[in-house]
Image (cartoon, rainbow, N blue to C red; front, side, top):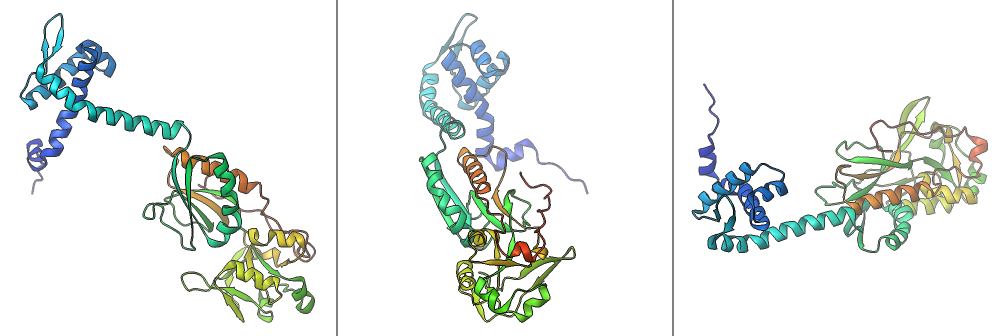
Length: 346
């Protein structure tokens, strides 16, 4: 059985609008150029094409319209009455196209403008992102910001999100991901709890301690992740307290109710202040990060580019990757440096 490709005539018959637009576009552009320049030669120079190409495009347009648009002699080119009418009808559309192109150029080259929709998890959004937005707005007052806090990984296209902050391990290969800082998952307790119960020396010792779990938005309990002897290990310890918000989990730990595995950015200040103590640092996983995600490096709108640059610089300067001056330094080996991630933006 042979396969016969549809002919040009069949496409035109099925889709006259597309056929008309594609056939007349070059003619309209050539016509506008000739009308503005008063000459086929100058119009050709303006468009960067040959004079014969401009002439053919205008002749084809005249055939489609069934009207002469120019009176041409060897010495002059004069627009006809029909041509003047057609020019006046076309000019508003052409001006709108040029205006739209100029506005797009301004978006890329002028001050950033428009709406910026940002997504982050509750913990990272409240603790890190939100406090920086006032400073960002001071630098870029023409931008309107919308910050959405939710635990799920949003779809940048479907949810119309410009920039998303994501935590942990990234699996979506369709986005550009810039690692801001490593994500440390530290098992912490209050000094009072440590005085009463000591600290676990191994992952297995957690079974003998009071633990505090976090329930995720999807209903599952968040696992406690470790790297033991070079291999990943995850557990979900038994717990007397389970909470759905990371800030509440941290407060329960501060109040001395038990141990919890918390992100480093949450506990950094408390570790330095001595109100929390970290343990099991020698088995902390090193394959996680806090990432700033967007769709493409190509033709990135200026409003997104300035936000990405600002947040990258400011968050990296916050020194959130820490253990603090706590008993962790005396009880555990240092946390290893994060592994280099291949294919992730610097």
